[in-house]
Image (cartoon, rainbow, N blue to C red; front, side, top):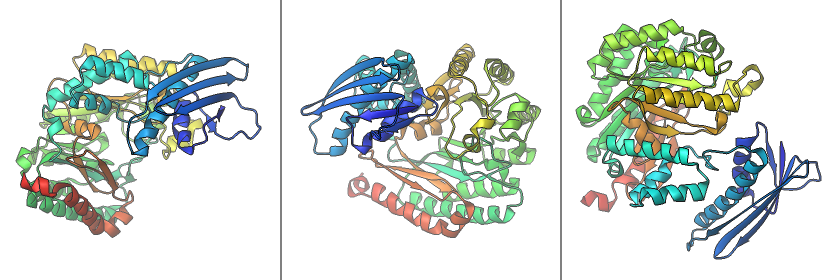
Amino acid sequence: MQILIKGLQDERFHRPLRLIANLFFEESEVILTDNGDCYDITVDFTLEISEKVKVEASLTDEEGNIFKANAEKILPITEIEKESFKVVKNAVSYVYLTVLQEKTGMIQKWGFLTGIRPTKLLHKYMQQGVPKEIAHKQLKEDYLITDEKIDLMQRIVDRQLAVVPDLYELGKEVSIYIGIPFCPTKCAYCTFPAYAINGRQGSVDSFLGGLHFEMKKIGEWLKKNNVKITTVYYGGGTPTSITAEEMDMLYEEMYASFPDVENIREVTVEAGRPDTITPEKLDVLKKWNIDRISINPQSYIQETLKAIGRHHTVEETINKYHLARSMGMNNINMDLIIGLPGEGVPEFTYTLNETEKLMPESLTVHTLSFKRASEMTKNKEKYKVASRTEIEDMMSLAEQWTKDHDYSPYYLYRQKNILGNLENVGYSLPNQESIYNIMIMEEQQTIIGLGCGAASKFVDPETGKITHFANPKDPKSYNDGFEAYTEDKIKILNELFTKEKLVKE
């Protein structure tokens, strides 16, 4: 699908226009300069900018059908050009989405939002004391979000504030993400730093040495500056890919290096791959008072697991779940993925029925996303996935199933190239929510990433401005430079947390 855009020469429009086009068409190309070719769709824009932004769009398709829309937005008084352009971009996006919806008959429930964290918008209104009905009206008018999705956002925000009443006051604390970049095998949809662990013991040993160093140094800084830790999350990869002895030493380091570990609100260890779980590793978790883990089936269809590169059986998932439960794991999360290759409503219904036999404390329902670097995206022709309508039906099934079984949504995020332009939603039974998931999604505090591929998000406690910093994804680069990366992170922490105004407090 080739779409010619007329009247907008600024290259900054290209990306949002392309992302919105991708909501409607599988393969789309947005072109800002007319080369005289034949185009499937032409959209003529008229843009006026003064005290207000006035935008008109006229879409003409190959059959000569014409669809029109217009929008008018007040331009804020600001000297920051980026803020002004955001208003212009949103007005353009508004009319562009409107004409594409009229052309295709497809309603985008998230409007023209393509960002990852829509609930942040609602939190912003809540922090400003804006009444809910006005906030909802603004979201609908500004972004064309439907009532259904606004209601979902509000339920999640309400739940988050019930779980973490001091959410808006945690900017002077931090959470810690610890990345273990090894897995038994690499899943076809995955783009996380994950390396098959077999034959890599040398890399594992070197990596763990660097990780222990990072934990020591960051722990020293936190203690020195009296900064508390809210949550710790071991992710990856699969953190339970390493040996029980290595896990034991890692948690011992956590207790030795980090401040006041006994009062950290939550420590989570992903044990997502059932083929990495052993009684010895569960004993280690229990020894260090860790009882929140993830065991991720993704699907209960064996053929699907084989197709996506998960070399474990459905039976193994179930057995390891019961093993973990019998050994004191009292807060287990499970992940399911909607839209895996070859799966439709019957297969997903079966997966939900199998989940019902286990009833984990929390359940994250992901919608498959074709991530740019994944094996699945590179070989799309090999992986047949469900239609948009069937994807929506599966999401509706998940929503109804969780409601019927007393699970409530407590966080959500979205991804680009996500099937059906839907979302990933975390559900939990009462009082079993993951605080870390709330912190990472709502960006109310700094999250320090330690380990290979770990991304840090430094949130200024006063302004909320976010600075990103990422450790390298491959173990060799990490092993070669972990000392320098640790120093770089400490420099940023010093800038944020040792300002005069904070020291006085």
